[in-house]
Image (cartoon, rainbow, N blue to C red; front, side):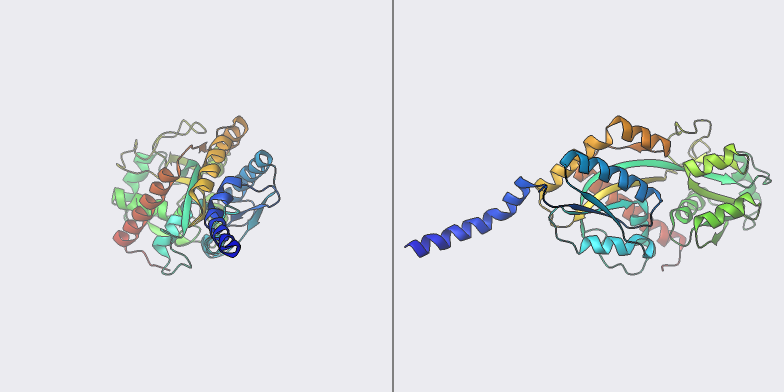
Length: 323
């Protein structure tokens, strides 16, 4: 009888273990790893480190940032997807994640099912700028010039499938434009050619492009978001310029490996929403031309799926080469 009772007790403990883990999460004797799938210094890395510091301070445990670089973020995402679904390995995503699924033929994970959405962190527009001597000083003039000279203007990007590339392909699709794509190995190379007058236009991060415009190195045309940016309120949106339906925002969020207990996801979501609502994070985001976002796991998951669908449809419509 004692042996039978022991077997029953062990079975009950085994069944209770996942729930008990969720109830005791986070364990301050462990550390959380936040995977940043890009190199240090980029927007994913900067925001990821700011959030990691706040999360570590709030929960009184180390939050270690690991940069897993390669394949436009796919290597870091694959590493996160293979990790234990226990809340101690997280991944910061950006808009590049959903674009990759559209332009890359094979990924070492399923972009729709390999992760449990936790929370969106923030979003922000980009800026379209042109070389100083291009005879177009606003969006209407640029659109007119592109339509008058199809196939003669060009734009740069950080490579096929980059957010710079897709932002211009979206513009071409919605406005019916014929503008040549010039892929570079890195966005900074395209920016240098834009400043040097060797490239007609480029869509880049708002702080970077706005600094160039204020320095009289390029002409600002429009922002890519659904409304004007507080950082550069003098620049209209492309929707205002007449490109109906054009909206593109860089966004960032946190996911965990699929199968992470919902209790753990909810604890992370609540803490991340609190962090993003703090005044210093709001100020930090504003300096980056972005704004923090509060979301539920479901809302963030819906956003990811919508973005996956949108970019896949654009790639198919434009006949872009899948890498």
